[in-house]
Length: 372
Image 1 (cartoon, one colour):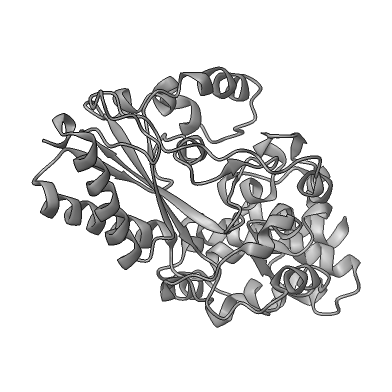
Image 2: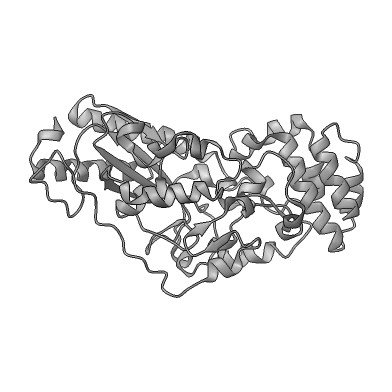
């Protein structure tokens, strides 16, 4: 087993894993140890302050999020993976292009990461193929693949494995890739060395060298956040975050935050659009993340007219499907209300068309949109 191998053998295996990962479209691979005890106080404080909102699963597993060997017994090392998601056709100056679209109130804005195929499916399948490739090298081994799908401290593991540092917006930033990437992990039951690991004691692998922070005095992400969800550097109150409100939050959107949402109907990229490091963001090598035409330049009125059958058909294979038709309409109703106040002539009739919608949640947001 690799867990009892010498250092050179372990490093050679890591090199082979990285080569396999590149073939599968991953941008970078890192190795993390499983001692995340330093992250536990911050996690518990964040939960105690209620910053996770209605995401009860964040608290349901307790400290298992910070204890990989409890979440998956037998885990010894964590392979972290990064995959860029900017569509291949993303133009130069894309940040300015996206910021300009936020100034067109009649246009529905979907976060960049959600304009292509569902990343959960893409990364999970490719991580599974990476695990199969490792098994061909060393034989069967215990493992579990994660992609934003379980109580895993993804950003913490990514930072500890050298993928980047935690930005003030709490996302991971890389000097050569900004923050426009997905993260995934493979928990494995054997020891792997990191880049600078001391492998003289192979049963206790050292992680890759963590990246140092390069945010400096910059506060662009904090200053830009429309709802002031970044309450302090490195602290995010999800209850105010537009990504949380449009995707995770199941009920009525707080009235005081609705006008601040503008025309954002699924997610929010503002903190990333303002980040200077994203001038280095890379285009994806994976065609799955190429933007579908319906998510670029679509009018709110047209999107609001979709029946549930339309919604299910047009979100096939998209991460947007997970919010369901009701939340989709809720989000667009808020955006249409903001467009109406901005003078969009199509917003009023579109909202009136659903003033008697079967959903009480939709009706409530339509009424607010029409009457303020």
